Amino acid sequence: MPKAQETVLEIDLSALKHNFEYLKSKLQKETKFLAVVKAFAYGNDADDIALYLQDLGVDYFAVAYTSEGVALRNAGITKPILVLHPLPVSFHTIIERCLEPSIYNWKVLNEFLEVATEKNQKHYPVHVKFNTGLNRLGFDLEDIETIHSKTNSTEAIHIKSIFSHLAASEDLKEKEFTEQQISTFKTITETFTKVFNYAPFLHLSNTSGILNYPEAHLDMVRSGIGLYGFGNSEEENKNFKPIAKLKSVISQIHRIEKGETVGYNRAYKSEEAITTATIPIGHADGIGRQYGQGKGFVIIDGKKAPIVGNVCMDMIMVNITGIDCEEGDEVIIFDGAHTAEDLANAANTISYELISAISQRVKRVIKK
Ligand SMILES: *Cc1c(COP(=O)(O)O)cnc(C)c1O
Image (cartoon, rainbow, N blue to C red; front, side, top):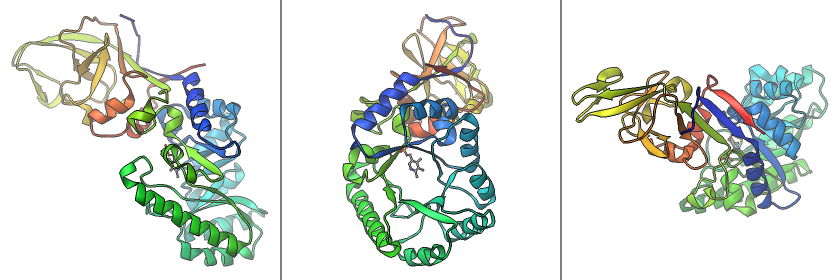
């Protein structure tokens, strides 16, 4: 049995390269690639991942919030960074750090124009977001004329791209809805080009859009989850390599007699004698309480050890009855074989949630 010392999230950059190259192989040569590195690159490690992807030749980065873009600039990212959900309070910082805002409603358009003008900007690059059915952020087709009249009289900003976001590109039962989104976006882009008399670049596809809707690749694609090793389907998962391995260690082993309870609220009552191992990872590290009560599990000596009782803030207890192991042995929470998606599914959630929740307390180790 391999030994371990602490809880570590190990990031394998060669797996990241594999995923990037697989996604690129789906694209036309001229299609640009935007890497979505919001939320610490989905909980992995934004700085090292973005720097590596910059070396591999990605064209663009995206983050959700301005502070994430600032962190990337501080880490040495020089490629353009799209901020998907900037809030007006951060517009000065956006311009100071050369970040490119998504403009998704009138308040954002008006306030960004004001700040760009006040800061004497000329043709500051912005990206206009349209809503085609996700109903989350974005303008509608009918807004194009007014966007034009508001921006036509100033040189402060330049609309570099227009984009939208697919709601269910991973779900082939929703093919008709996705095709409707693609067609709505096409109408929007044609109208925009007519009204503005130039063609900004266009982007619509996330990872599953890349895999399932080649006709929606347009000028650029935006991939997050695929880079980190998940294809959102059993078939596609085979083509990706999860980049992260989350491992920990057995801190202590207990024998629990029949009738005893384990953990807070005495949530587990043993009906037979079992052996448990206490592992130093809990809900403060991103393993939420939904993984407790036998739903979630870890892997010890290649075998599944289900979580017993409630997840604590800093620890879980798992059932190791019948598993040959001792204190100090390595514990796998997820890796390339026992994936974050399998674990997430066991608690009725998705890989995105599990991986992006791994908290900053967990030590990151980058494997070059
Ligand atoms: C998060 C996000 C993406 C990335 O989606 P994946 O499914 O992870 O590839 C792309 N576009 C927008 C607007 C997003 O918010």
